[in-house]
Length: 123
Image 1 (cartoon, rainbow, N blue to C red):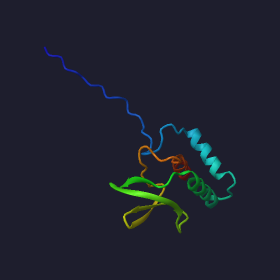
Image 2: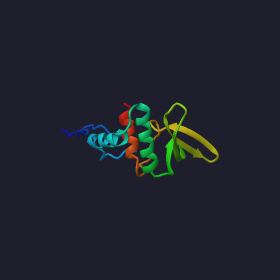
Image 3: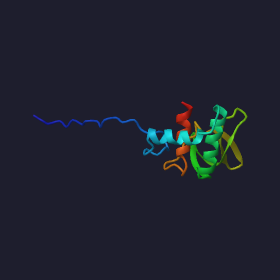
Image 4: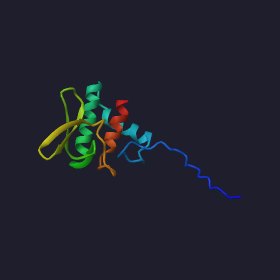
């Protein structure tokens, strides 16, 4: 009689969003949301609050992968639709990508917690 080894798979845990520090708790994200929107009267002003916090706190430039291609995030901006976008470059090519859809590198740049808070606020 031969013994067979049975492998028990580890319990699946929900992974944090790519590039977002795992130590960010819901409570911390809610505090960041409160800080960004405290004086805002409507959604547009709240978005501007997040934009201001990202502009002040997000360490730029940083590199990340977009569709498997390395790009440099040079700055963030507001587009005509009043969305926060990352201005990404590769060589002479420049593309605006929604900050909500931007994959972040691991480890994320300092200040990326504001992106996580914005993504939570957008839900």
